[in-house]
Length: 197
Image (cartoon, rainbow, N blue to C red; front, side, top):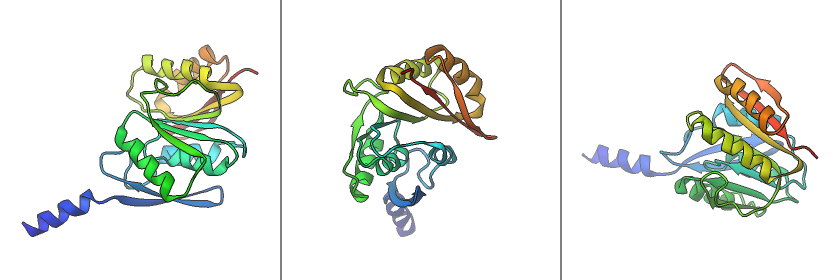
């Protein structure tokens, strides 16, 4: 019984992982029930590799999880502001915890189902590690909302399972009038649409 109690206490404790990107290292606290709690997922790693961020960019991480993409972007754009949003209050709580743990001031975390609770503003860069099973209607809503929330010339970067590549190619072309496949791997594809200036 004491072994079981010990195990139960252990799995309730936060997990901790490290991320290195663009010459800085961040620590992330995670917990069971969040997406990819024991290691940064391959899709996020792939997306980070291909992001083009300027120091002054205002950024949005849509579906932030525990903050991997958003907090790395905030570090890369210290003169801008980065907003992290997720519909899961536990994810938002851990994003805020990780923001504080890494002493990142130019960011905020918000509970929002997609763009619904985001104040009307515009961003230079929006990123999303797109969930595969939300349905095509919701994916189109993301595309239309992202276009609305981007500054002219701004980019909506996504990483998704490669099986959705053709859907997003069609969707970006329909909504943005533009689609750029940045990197296609066996499992994931990184792509973006750019809002016309």
